[in-house]
Length: 336
Image 1 (tube, rainbow, N blue to C red):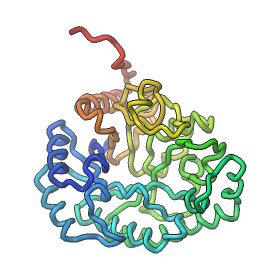
Image 2 (cartoon, helix red, strand yellow):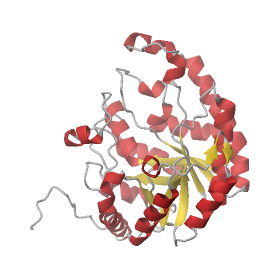
Image 3 (tube, rainbow, N blue to C red):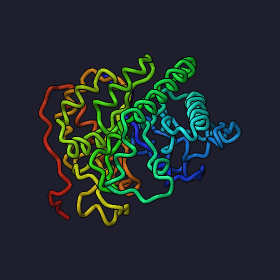
């Protein structure tokens, strides 16, 4: 593997617009030995009603320059080019996100692939199993997916001129209601469907951010072969999100990690080797990958940033040397 570097995410809700905290977090990331950080454009309040706040962006740039780090950018969690009600504003936010990426000298802008808004379809009524069919007509889905395709075909040249690649991230099948076919309104949870969408967009600088945690959860829910899905996505991967989980999708409205962790449920974003994702089998598939490896951990695991970095380095070394990686588990009892 000849990667550009190893990074880690900055949690948007943890920063919540606090640039002093951003500065402190970047210092911790650098001190722990990472050479990339992923900046959430929404977490640093860079975009206001679709427009890039250049004054705020200048302050952010000055902070970023204090460190020897390089950067990637994560788009807003609610950014959605399949949101027909707010499409013009969504597209403006997207364009501003690309401009921000260029302004801070980054090359990757991560976008969660589009989905049908259940709130929009619901129109204020409680949805149940019986009205799921109302939001899943093939004509409706195809129309919204084509809207996203056209928008990205228009945005891609703008991004390319600024040296930015748009990377569409696969989603996570979290099921707060008893929907049997979540991929019908969130196609990006299915790797095969995401690959098809990227092929339809057909732009050199539009590819995939493959999130292994999301893909593993989806493979358990949809019952597809996890490693085969990675092979399918490989030709289109431009960025990677790395974290661990147990492959148990969340099927209830419970959102607090303190109530889910002991059951191993949900999109846990744990350090590598804490869950069940077979990274020892994944990394040999990535031998020709030359982008950034970005850990995406929840802030609750910040004491294990350096530990997580070491696990990734071991995976890279074992891959490059064609060696079998010795499995390390945090559940092995350590001597005091």
